[in-house]
Length: 148
Image (tube, rainbow, N blue to C red; front, side, top):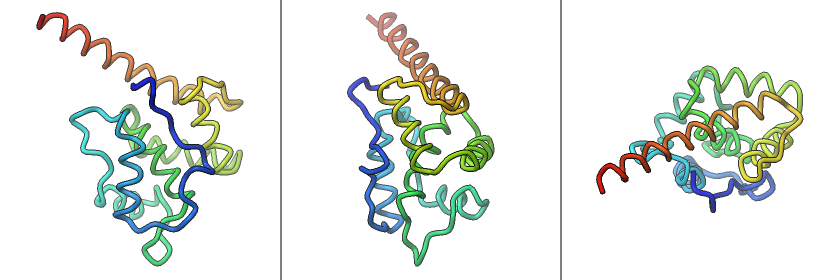
């Protein structure tokens, strides 16, 4: 994971409704540093499937709001280690405990600064993602050393 990389806080996510192509561009720019090279990022068909299966609320007049964008950032980050069903179940469970902005900012605080959230689910899921990316980095370093 790129050490200079940081997720936007809730208040830094656009507070204007965005069309799907704008959402894809934004989320993929935010998540590009943590996406493996082979990962094509978030696609329109993924978002449509997330809506279809209830993992993401339907857009209002084809426009997505801050809450949906934050959820897509979390999903895109977590999907490297968890299934979409596990992510949706976890996010739905967490949303019964706190507001979306509190949950998202706890996620960002841990991912950006290692600040432990009060919620152990957020902490362990973020740790899992970070460890996964650290492992990939170690494998890449090992492969580069073997080439030289």
